Image (cartoon, rainbow, N blue to C red; front, side):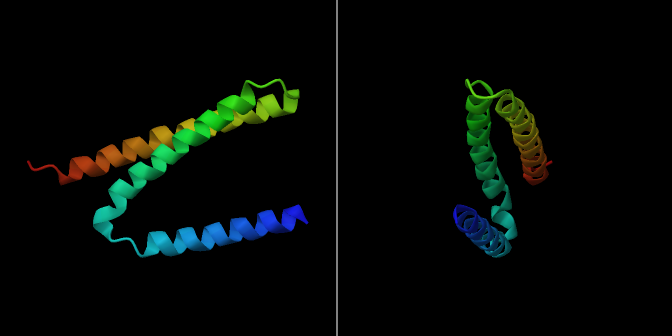
Length: 91
């Protein structure tokens, strides 16, 4: 029963996220991306707490992989944001 609720929440989040991103004007994409990168930083903190906890070895490996992927997401997001902001600078 819990899996059904989690699947419903995932589908609702996908729909709301798609509709939200689709209706944002192009000039607001850069600030929105920066905000999304900040939220990904929270993911890194959660993954660090999972990797460093006293759970099973499987949880530690899963947490370490989560830290790696979340870090790639944060760094890549900030690099793309920086590149987009450089496009707005006057020459």
